[in-house]
Length: 378
Image 1 (spheres, rainbow, N blue to C red):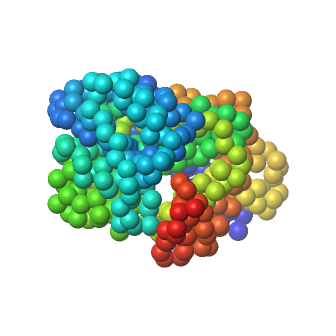
Image 2 (image 1 turned 90 degrees about the horizontal axis):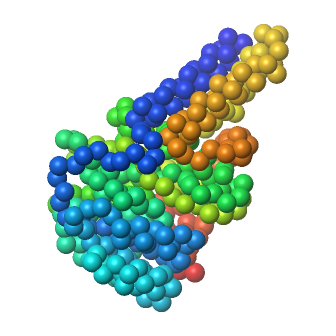
Image 3 (image 1 turned 135 degrees about the horizontal axis):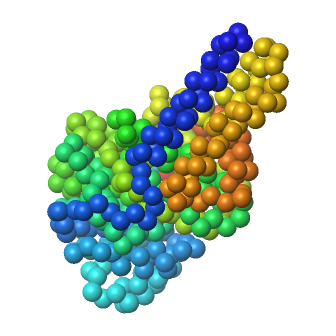
């Protein structure tokens, strides 16, 4: 029994280290210029928005300052009374050379409010290449070039995970540790070995491909548009690929409740859409290998404290090194934030297996065991 526990701990530590090595090899440091792109076709960028966020002014300014020969911005807002529209108009007035439009209204094609908000923008896009970009992505000047450079011969979709940046307060630091060295790391490691999953923050589509296979309405087949995109692309025989350097998402201040509810929502979405891939997530983080290793140490009669310290170092030091190597957020709060994250991971996993209601962008939603519902806006 002691040998079995020790072996389980060693396997989990090895898998954790391997994922860090693969992700580190797959990604380049934040701020690295995009690889050269020969094809510089016109691009439509569809940005669904809802309300003013802490960094709205900056993210809008970045969207109007992209280094790409020809692109259009299509801002999609569900309510014509949304205050973010005034901010968009200010940005448009300050950058008259960039073709931009604001479209209001909502097409209820799914239980996903963001997808419903995107429909009008997708249909209005004038170009064959379309980017669906969340409003809180901090686009670098070579944003489009990074996405275009991510294409390969078998690519059906190019995406980027969000990298948490500019946290204010401890719980925003915790969210950085969820987003960066946890979720982004595993997503890039998975893509590198052939299991690419779409990420809805930034998605580059070849419009004729999606239009020829059900159109944007096909993304309503799952509650999460990125899950539907992954399944559609794979069904067509293509792959989801990621950019070489993922884009920042400035966080600002986060509360404990916000971090918990966001992670619980994402976990429930993963559980509903990809249950077989989601089930092993309970083994992620430091707690499972730490529990196995300490149990083995007690059974072997060796110093359990020394074993616990060794396991903790083997898990956390490479993870922090990955963050430093890629230019991500690492501070004196990062280690306690990682520990809190790893305590939350199994609790979030357990919570995800039940039904639950939450408010997403002003919409009440319920995620059950097999389906999801969008209720009346609140």
